[in-house]
Length: 203
Length: 187
Image 1 (cartoon, each protein chain N blue to C red):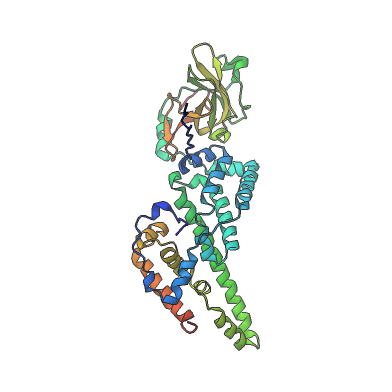
Image 2 (image 1 turned 120 degrees about the vertical axis):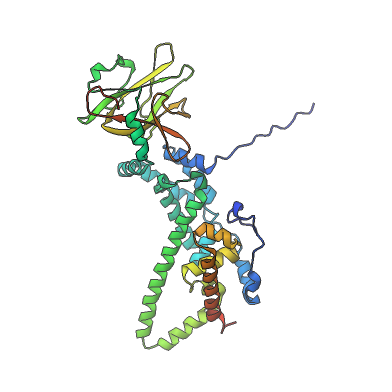
């Protein structure tokens, strides 16, 4: 047999009972085992559909909504923990981000500005990705503040729970060491920040 | 001077790695999974549906559906098993749709004056195993294919389709009875 159904499932051969079949059917069963290859166009068509979906704002919103969510116990843990991020209602009160600390998005009426900090002296670049920006690694780059290797970014976050992670040098996903984290269901840890409308409060 | 050949090995990323990359926005990585699984279950789909063309549509739809639901894949390293279930549901749905339309066709035939000829033609058409398999229920057809064409054991099938071994054996038993009934007079 030349085509594998699944190589891992082929270890317990020997239970075949094709001998139970009438001889006239045996040849047809053997013929049915010949490999089947589909057109190479399948890949092109599937990927075209994938790209269309990824470009659709409605799909992106749905994808965000159905992304692995925080389990209830983790939400409670997050609510009880202290996050390093500073939650501020007024951007003017953000700890001197200045021109070097870009605001990834303007805060709406239900949003507050949150400053994220990561100490990574050897990093060449750091980005912030999370549920609030569809995990887009390009949406919120951090900037280096001073020579100590402190990276910061301030983003406007809607009130509520958010999961996030830092991306160091474009490939290493690093949870916030100062924030609670939850398993994302895929073997990685996501940090959690809980944003409340109360001025200056960090949950 | 003899220089050693430089051996470069490219390590294929695991399914879990690819799934995570896609979920974090690198959608082009999904092509790896498409290439990896496009043909793996093509034979299963083509035998379930009765043609390679139908299998191609089913596999393509299942791959797109898997992308749509990727966030619900709880065990990314077992993408293969998860994808198989999506494809299986697609094949079952198509078979049930076909059976319904067959039923409608049959009802039309019964109202036609040449009903006896139609019935005779129908009986004569059921000559090959492949055609006979199409007359089985999707569940009977599937257990026959997984056992005899894909050569899986009952335990492997049970794990794959989340059904107990006794129930699978009963399906097989009924599949044999039905095949004997369909093919008995023409063999």
